[in-house]
Length: 576
Image (cartoon, rainbow, N blue to C red; front, side, top):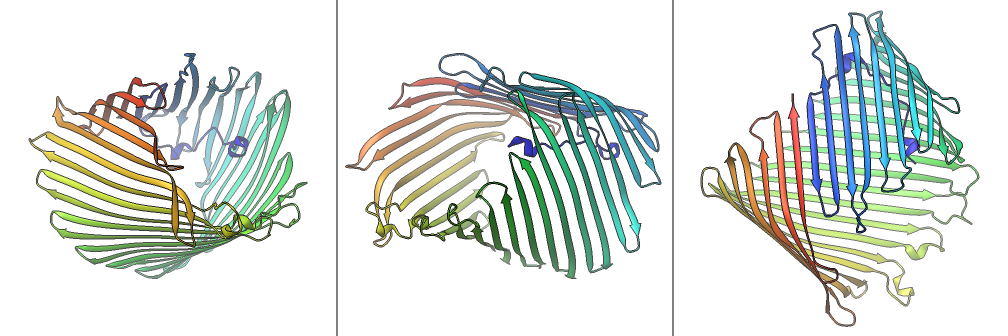
């Protein structure tokens, strides 16, 4: 639910930490029957006067025009900012916040909003203690319900307080909403302690206490949700040598959620990380264990999940022309439920993931990349009622790539083979096999030729062959049910200095054919999408980026009426 993700954050950030980039971004793109607008704006006054301000604005809008022709809008807009007087030890001013959402694609009466305006005062005393109370008035809208009420709270920050061998950082806040019919409260305390025992070791302790209570409308009634969270986290850092580092971390977390049925969640986690930074060999080893229990009041969905995970990352520079990268991950999960009569979801899971990349610079103009990938997943249900779903999922991929670049010519050739098998452990006990396989082969080639100083000719081609069907594991045989063939081609001309713009004009062609193989191989569908496009962009100045593109699409579908439409995109980024 969305309510679990919406904490009541303070409306007033710490003034000294405000570093907003001056930025204006707009983005528009059109597809077949949708129009999308996205925009952001942020600005901040120079920190050279007593009167300062900052503002942030974000909006997104979507227009859907379905077949019947009636326009349906979905809009969301957020605006917030500060106007404040800055002094040496205190700051005071106004804060404002406005959020509005309207989704008429779902319902005509689907509007939400929250608007706040208030005063804040930020005072610093004893050099490292900062207190910030605030008080404002707000309006909240939830469909047909409109509330007016108070927005108040405060924040306390103890910054880098030293005692004995420890340094403490404390942040506490209270955020309150008072309406005539409902109230929202959140209290949050975060404490962070660090200590360096020696130049080779450091210890840190993080403690959090959070209580949240929200009341909201459901139809014409008011529902309440409360969430209490406690967390304790300890980290030990060891610099074993200039090239070897070790981290040991322990975390305890508990959450109490009251929403319809109460829920209690407790997590205990250990984490180990070892890092080696060598001249030619770098590797990272991690190991994590966790134990999470969920106690749901009045239901049979209580559970306990135990997980162990090991990960290894290796980067080996064999010599200037050869490089090897390797990644391995293993995850074992155990999911248990106390009620084995009603709930039979108890299961064990194992995952193995392998990634290997070998790079070889054959010559100054030719480079070979060889990528391999394997994923193995085994799911084992403990009780016989679910054991028919026990299965192995295996995915294998091999992807060699060849890059050639000499002078004005560059060429990249890539080919990929992928096989995805799902095999059920007890498939032989059923009259109809359930195991299946998906296979795919891809070959692509891209070519770029600079035939004049700012003039380029480019082409890209891609072929995909796919099939899927029933898999007979004992015979390692397949009965193909469906197969596909996809061709994609684009040809373009590019001018990187066209009246200070980059201009690209091209033509794209896409065709996808689908066959059914039961009872005999029959062409089932053909889809063709083709058309020209033009793209204009400006990137010569780092503070301004502009992009405009327009394409004309001709879609011929053997199952549907042919269509013709325009699609486009506009984008502007301005940094000031």
